[in-house]
Amino acid sequence: MSEIVYEFEDILEQIQHTLATEDKQQFREIFFENHTYDQAQIYLSLTLEERKLAYQFLTPEEMAMVFELLEEDVEDVEKYLSEMDEAYVSRMLAEMYSDNAVDVLKQVGEENVRTYLRLMPHKTATELRQLLNYDDDTAGAMMTTEFIYVHESDTLKTAMSTVKRFAEDAETIYYVYVTDDENHLTGILTLKDLIVKPDEKLVKDI
Image 1 (cartoon, rainbow, N blue to C red):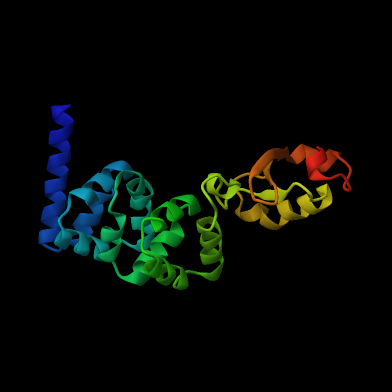
Image 2: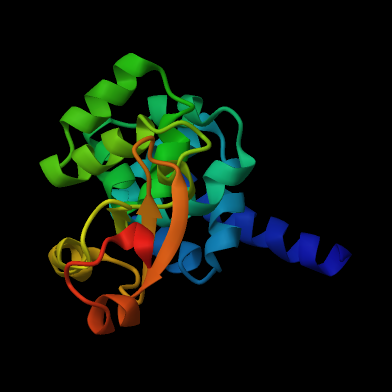
């Protein structure tokens, strides 16, 4: 265990040296030699001034990978976001999985949330706004927009049209979430159901 700690401290020292000398190329080489989890730990170990340089050395897309892990462990996420340019934060959040981005936004003041969403691509901002408005016990809180869901009163024909419309961005099309009027999860539909059952049949009757 002590060897692992020593190794991390050695890596952190190297990273801090590259920041002190403003050596972007060396910083990136050392930083990306490490696993994403270790990158997050390195980030958390930096001082404010060091982090500000790191934002210049890393793209928002690269920082998004760090924040995918960071949001689960860090309470004061808003403090870190406030250190970044608003456009940088917006691009970073847009690159994250939607449920993780929402977890981050829930820790941020409403005014900042509006700013970040306004700077995002319209489609991404719309998805995040939708998820932010769900209560914790709704299907939306349990799912991400990488999954497809249909209403229980839809016909199978309508449900299949929904699957086709969102298939390209979905994590899977083999299982579709079913919700009621209050957006509570009521069941799961399989792609096989949509294919073999009559088009006019209602989802809730499957």
